[in-house]
Amino acid sequence: MRNNPRRFNKKQNGQITLPNEIWSLICTELSPFDLLNLRRVNRQLNELVTDKLKALFYLDLLRCDTEQLSNDEYEDEDFHQLKKTNIYMHLDERSAVVMVDDRWTSKDVYTLWEAIQFFAPFVRCLTIDVALAELIVAALSSVKLSRWYAFQCYVDTVGQHGVEELHMKCNKQTNHKRVLFPQMTEFTLRAMPSDLAHLSRLSDYGVQKEAIFSNECIQLVRCTLLEPTGTKMPGEKTICTRFGAKRPHQHLRAFKQWIGAENLKEKYMQQYST
Image (cartoon, rainbow, N blue to C red; front, side):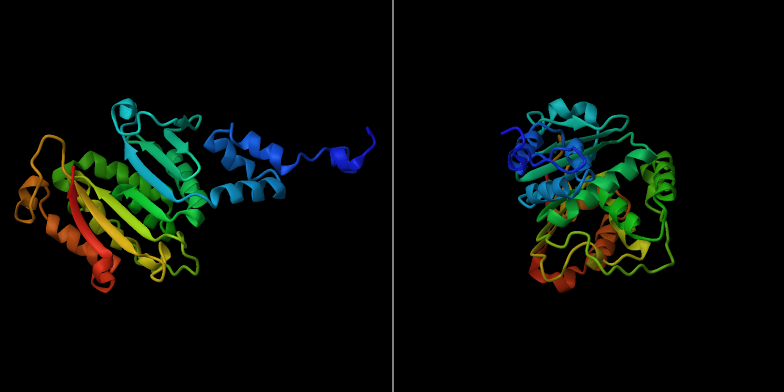
């Protein structure tokens, strides 16, 4: 029995290959970041993790104050922090949540982009803060992410009143043969009043929406404008005062033009929420 190669599945170099059933049990105990790294070990583990991710349906990407995790809707989730970063991740069978702190670093930006690319081929429904949507568009452009991060830091120092006029123009048009989210059917962008300028900057990088999702697969594009806690639900006529932006309609108009809302027709919707 000890010399039975079928029992031990022993390679010629003396290594023992564990069956997928054992690795599947191991995967259930790993953090999302360890699972991500497991794909790089060998072909067997790459295929195993890929099969696990095929069941993934939802991806939620947020930039927020991660110190307040215990006070929001994700307080019951099991989040794992990647060492030496400000990135947190929760992963279960059907959904993934990735959070980055407001006080992010250049390393966080690159790591977050890697995580997005890791999940992108499998996601059907994406919900994303508009600031991170700008990160995705910038990453798909000819602009270096380090330069984009420096621009974002400058924007943060300017303040709300000056941020409206700041744009990072990219003269080079970028054509992509691959779609980042090839299976995505539902695309939801979240925007707080202070985030509206991100909407109009999405068109600055020379990246078409077709680089993000497939026109054949997409069923719904939703722009959700979040009302600050403690204020009344804004109506269309009061958005300028409620959202505190100088040009809210201009930001939304620029976004709708970039996303092709006219061609999407009933597939595009705009809503206000708390």
